[in-house]
Length: 194
Image (cartoon, rainbow, N blue to C red; front, side, top):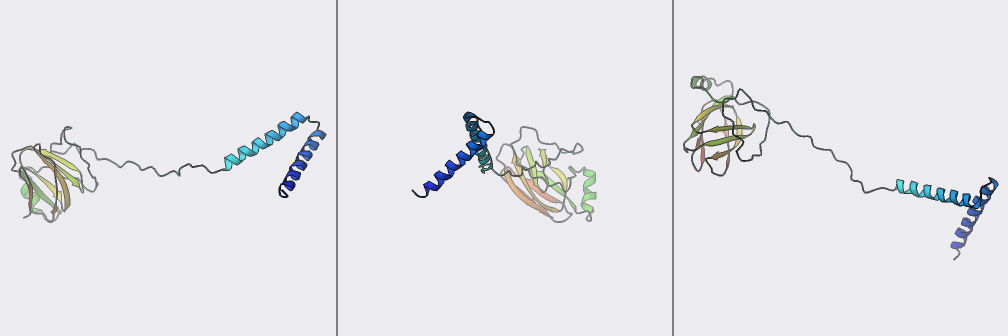
């Protein structure tokens, strides 16, 4: 009980000082009570404003990456909008040259210094083929006969749909300027080097 007596005396002294100071200013008892109430309400608002909240720390919003636009000079037939959804990877380091004309094949094969190589996409399945290079670039080719494209030396991953079959994934490496062959069968894909 002793600990409550000093607090009670302090509160009584504070109210007495407050009332006496208000009385000397000509305030009525109601005005003094309103002033005390306003002071208490202000203290409550300031206390609540200072309390921390459970607001989450803002995080950095990821920005969308650039998407490639089709090259209008590309001679290969790009896939139609009825193709299955893909998850492409794009690394804009170079642009494939597309189909070779028969007269250009000998020149491309003879030029070993440019680090590019012809890749024959040989269709032995008798079906329509959707061939998609996934990395290091994203490029789609749709064809029913064999075709040749030129690619720089490097490692490639691909996805292919042969006819109405499920997609098949694979990879190959272009290691020199000689002709490489990717042969498509009904149930498999075979890569051969010179």
